[in-house]
Image 1 (cartoon, rainbow, N blue to C red):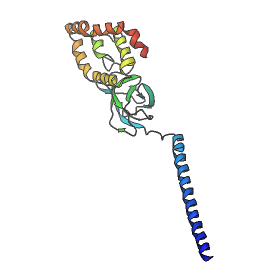
Image 2: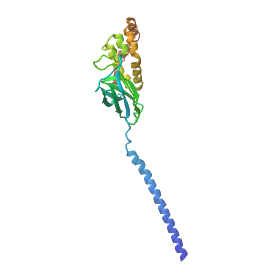
Image 3: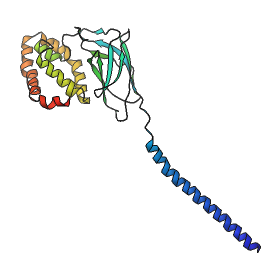
Image 4: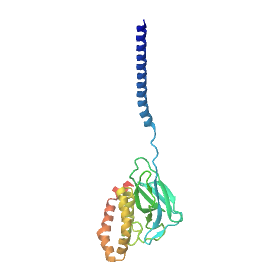
Amino acid sequence: MKAQITGNNLRGRRAGRLAGALGLLLALVLLAGAVPAYAVDLEPPPQLPHYFAGTVSVTSPPGSVPEGTVVEALVDGVKKAETTVNEESGYELLVPGEFGDEGKTVSFKVAGVQASETAAWGPGEVDSGFDLTIATLPGGSSSPFPFCFIATAVYGTDTAEEVDILREFRDVVLLPSGLGAELVSLYYKTSPPIAEVISQHDFLRTAVKVGFVGPVVAILNWSYALWSERG
């Protein structure tokens, strides 16, 4: 009789341990199924903004911009942040972004004028010495060749139709593209002294007009319907 009771107790303990193990296994299975489902429903945490700070100036001849001038930051052509220049011609901008914005081109406008510099957006990046330069302020005359320096030197004015179409191609096709924006930035940095030399020699003006700028303008006019639709 005692042996029978002992056997029953042993089987009861084994059954209890088995039930406990099965319950734990079931809980783990339910938890494993619940956690991914919960995690999928969660929104990803916000991206840290990209911090930019520096000075703002105009070129040819060099000079500062007045306090209160508006500075805008655009990510792939979409405005993301805005601030104003302080009394020391400095600015600070926190440029927000979303997942997938890493590496996109950040461009800047000062009083509506495209700045020469561009950058690649990155979450939490800090560019504390990122100085901005523009050719001229609206209504000003800091540079005799605003926007399209060489074309302006060739045609003698920045209001020529040929200059307008080059400017439009820049805004519609080049600036929204990362590579295009880099090319524009390089052009702004290297072309002013070239334009200055061209403007002082009629022979060079004619040669560049006939051999380079004129054909480029002709191609842009011919293909206008194709690339202008991108805007």
